[in-house]
Image (cartoon, rainbow, N blue to C red; front, side):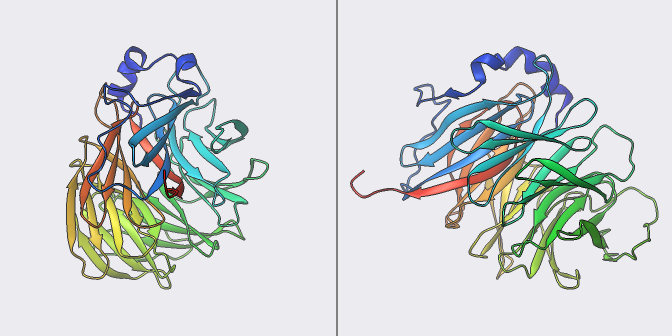
Length: 385
């Protein structure tokens, strides 16, 4: 989220928008664009997009044999003189488009659609207050964004369903207080989000655009809620910030930011099946495509937890900055890409972690408050290059 410190220094340290927009970047001897090459040379090139919330810019970054390269910075935002807050970013399953949630607006936020690679703006959709994380259905037709309502009163907010082809909002589905962590199962039938302000996980039918189940996440009291039931008032204790799905759709994983644990749920009945103790402030989660690892950013201590799904064992890797944020895993399950917000006027960073070795193998500065992250594509290195 946009911090007061980041807002205060943004005008001093962020390059002018005209300079940042659509700029191509090449390797730089200062090390600000390319980090040191990994000790084991990657066998492919990998690309990610990272939203920099207090810079109103999205970074396109490539990782490969020549290290970690910031290829382009794309300007986003509504007001040139204000920080609008590029928070969430996601890529369509076919890799042709990427989307970014622009959190602040008048009176609401928006989701912007870009062509991937050429990075040209092709559409916008007005949504709710402070749209945050997003997910696209496997067919690429529907996009769901949580309206986090960061600056509003602590009342139930919504999830916006968008027809992605024409960028039209189809519905605002009321869910809970401060929804976050938008995820769609692999079958494309169910959407899940976490309620930071009301200790719930909410399940939505993609076809019906309606809430189907709600799970109370208060530690030790986890249970399904009746359709009209509201839990008793009180400060949230789990404070779930993220929910993600296993590759076979059989398990859900939830980050309990306030209770320092990641929970495994049975997707069929939403019962808790395992608990993994973590460090301080688990925030975002990713499951490796091969199903071996659950990777959690620990926002409260500047590190990343790699949890083995079979044994439950955890290995810890320090991040390059003190405030970790987002994580995605490459399709070959070899690398985790982690965004780090940093603090104040310090630039955020992107880290690459080798999951097998539990080692950070590359890092590079990006812009202010690097947050939302999405994997775009990987391409094998051609022989002889």
